[in-house]
Amino acid sequence: MQNTEKTILAISPGTRELGVAVVANNKLLFYAVKNITNRKNKQAILQKVTKILNQLILDYEVSVLVIKQIESLYANGDFLLATVDHIKKLAKQLKLTLYQYRSKEVYSIVCNGDKVTNHDIAKYLTVQYFELAKHISHTKRYSWKTNYYNRLFFAIALGLVCSRRLQNNVN
Image (cartoon, rainbow, N blue to C red):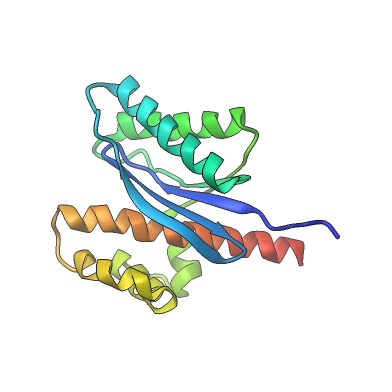
């Protein structure tokens, strides 16, 4: 019998940090916010992103990469779009299957609604994964922690959506 389980690396990209989650068979294997400390220029950011992703791909034997589809309206748009393009090229080089989902699509799948917020996603995920509860208080009020932990929760939601869709295609 063929093993159809795929290990998914989900990424909520940014130029300061990456929200990352590794999911296999609807199970959360790893999650983190990876900081990009050397941000002197675009090349330094892309090198750090490559190092982070290569390590995760190697550690978890990733075969699928899913990334948040970025709208071109973001304030740090040029750097962010360059980061996303770099991640896509890396996935292609490593022969990983690549998927992209818009935020709205992930929100509606995870929470079955139109007017879903980042905090709603966080609350939903903490019910499934109790270990995430320690991070939910950071998603209520605006601060640097809000964006930081929203990236984490979105990456997890993204990985779960991709995992569910892949399982539905197999069955």
